[in-house]
Length: 144
Image 1 (cartoon, rainbow, N blue to C red):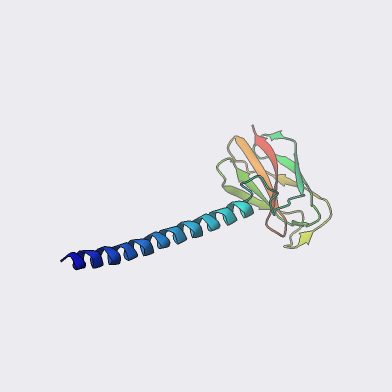
Image 2: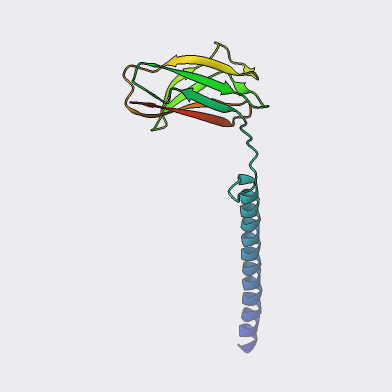
């Protein structure tokens, strides 16, 4: 019986060592994935891959519903898509607008007028313009 207990302890010890090795391997793999994620996510404060050089200026900054705003987009070196989204404070896209009716990328400054909806609620609105890489630039106005 003594030999059986020794054999059981040796087998059990070998099994426990394999389990510990698996746990160590899984922990190391999760740690490597986490480090890779944080290094590429921009969360660590490093420079992000998105370089939205475009600028969006909206004027006037406050208008009554149903009035016009002027949207000026100065695209960066990567250009800008030829449409802008008007987004309310609840992140709902209220409208799409464009200086030209086209779906191309432009590299020169674009300025156009846009009439807000008569039924738009008072509050803050953003004008979002994307570049060809999917990076966004924003301008703002307010319905009073």
